[in-house]
Amino acid sequence: MADDAPQLSDPVLVVVLDGFVDAGNAARLAAEALLEGRETTPVVHFDVDQLVDYRSRRPPLQFETDHWASYTPPVLDIVAVTDTGDTPYLLLFGPEPDSQWERFVAAIEQIVRRFGVRLVITLSGIPMAVPHTRPIGVTAHATRADLVEGHTAWFGSAEVPGSARTLLDHTGVSAGLFLPTETLTKAAERTEVEIAEQVENSEEVAQVVAALERQYDTVAEAAGEGGSGGLGGELPSAEELAAEVERFLAMRDPEDELPGDDD
Image 1 (cartoon, rainbow, N blue to C red):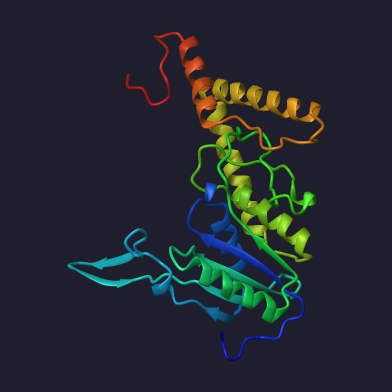
Image 2 (cartoon, one colour; image 1 turned 90 degrees about the vertical axis):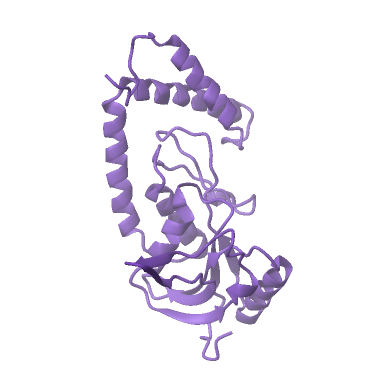
């Protein structure tokens, strides 16, 4: 722990760990937005040599002409940062530990007790079989019902700024923080325009999206009739989506070309 760690009053701890899964890079984009242009105060610096397996996640290396010049070491830190209203909170970000999990968790528990953390929020993106035109939702592992809400994601992209924006929107509401989302909002608007153009310019893509929408709506309607008031996690699986695409392809005229087919 840093010697000059700040004194905080009942702070929130936001956790963003890069590791197992982060669909659309939503959590990473959210963390970048939280840190962009904000001053941070070091609180805890973890020894990544004890926690990270470099063989499975090699740090980025910089090659210059004929030699390796430098590399970007992984960083796993807790910093104090303020929201746009100057309210301080704690942010834990960096690679998810590959080993010594029990010691890592025990250290986090000490930090929570040391600073009197009132709420811990972990951000991540879980892949879901949902078309881009339908809400995905944000869940709080059954701890906060008010975190469940719909939003528009970007179909077919490695980065989904709309998902990251929604993560921060709900984090802010739950934590009572004013978090920066302007950059993510602009990026989300651009990607939604781009994906709309892709769908509009391809009849095949539009038909596949329509089929996925029908499947999603059927599941959502069934969940609503069951009294859950939402999807309840019963979304189409990857296998079901693949079967839907196969049925679509089977109905096509064999002479029709798919996007990208050679003339």
